[in-house]
Amino acid sequence: MTLPQILVVRTFMDRAEGLAHFMLRAGEAPRLVATDDGGCPIESALSALEWTAAVGILHDDDLLHAARLTSETGAAVVERKIKKSCQYVYLGPRLDAPPTALLEGAVLFDEPGVKAVEFRQRAHALAHFLRATPGGGALLSVLARRAPEVRHLRRWLGPVIQELDVPRALLGGWFAAGSAGCLFLPTELDSSFRYIEVGLES
Image (cartoon, rainbow, N blue to C red; front, side, top):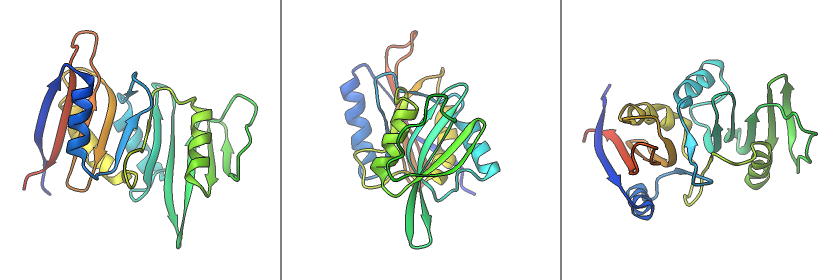
């Protein structure tokens, strides 16, 4: 097995320059972008990916359309192929608030601590995700032709996170079969945006 090799580590003092570099490097690759300037904390991302693989909640060929992680909970919208069609599944914590209209959604299961709702349309699944989370600190798959595959996040996110000097929130990430790149927000001690790209050595 070929080990990932660091391709690029760059810092930017300007947010616009960092985002421009991120978008240029991403090209047509599937990507996730933060919904707000706070970014998405990813300290628990690796353990969440490992746990969801172990229990079979997220499959390698699922496409990740939205995600939100906190220190206590997580939520996601995945696109899953079922026979010749696809479904969009919201997975997240059970809502303490009164249930909202599910807009053509069907509850797959509703157990203590976790709820799964199936939708036929991406827009309805994302709308439910944004109401349930309520959107802050989330990542959405936008400005790309397709969402990233879970297998590529599992493959590349670990090597990217290992290159961080301190924990940082994710502003955006692109994930392809052969490489991936992530743009991270500044911290209290470091005012620069950090872009890290990893990939297979060619």
